[in-house]
Length: 145
Image (cartoon, rainbow, N blue to C red; front, side, top):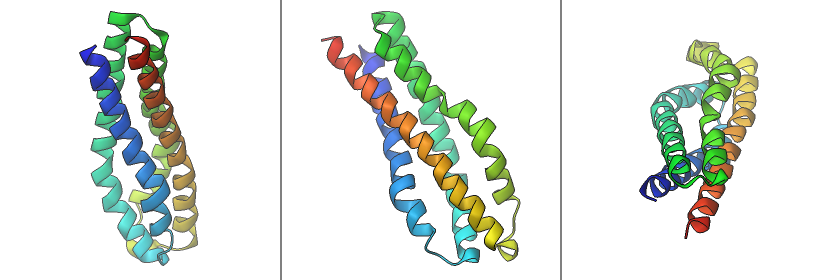
């Protein structure tokens, strides 16, 4: 049961951070002018990347360990949702990230703003995946009692 509790904690940390970014930080940042908007997003992204990536990976692995021990489908389903953040980020969000990271503050304008609006929508998918994984892990904990 310990891997399940670890998976639950890591998934909820991931979901909480992703939801904070989607519901609070990014909408607030979108109220900035183009140059400070891009200038704020770039270091924020660099700081969040290892945290979010690590939580998704470790939480997914802990969930799979829990599934291996308990054989309840909620653990494998939650793990797959949490781990799906990796390919979704690498294939869908990363091209947007690379374009934004490649821009200087002086290049900020309508193009960078449009990319950041798209980024916010795409990040919402990460929030949904993490939240769904957390709910499935809660269900798994309750089912194993």
